[in-house]
Image 1: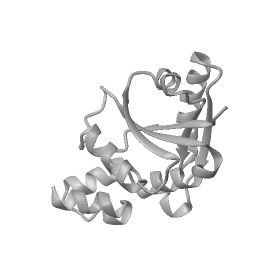
Image 2: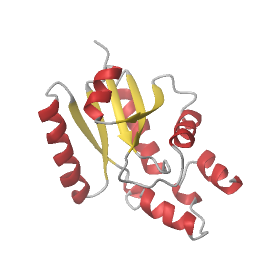
Image 3: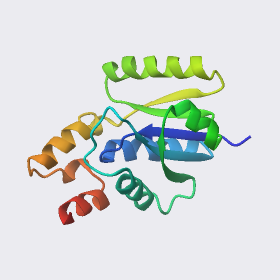
Image 4: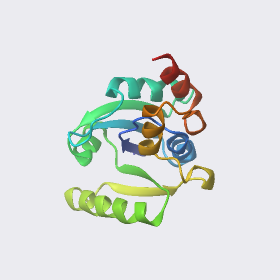
Length: 157
């Protein structure tokens, strides 16, 4: 059985912290689907398609990584794509507490889907999409937190 992993998130925008987690997870799985979740409770800065395009461009040379957009329960999407694993990145202890609550709920909904947590590299601990969006909204330079393709795209838009 193939080890297919879903890395769900809003990725609004995808940051160097996200990229770090994805690249370090590649050896652990046969396939990683980076899935842009549509969350009705959030007002994203960038369209889901734009975020998916960034992910595809960043990982175009990595055959084990693909990008998708989904809506609804993450465990339901896992079932649709055959993923038995969910990947989540952890920066702080508070992230773990929040992520464990979600992992426990997902395990209750489908015990066959296991959640993996990877801690980010220390240099990316302060990188959060919320902070990056605030920098962008206020015309600051967010490029130290972003993959080059994302930084260039934002400058052009």
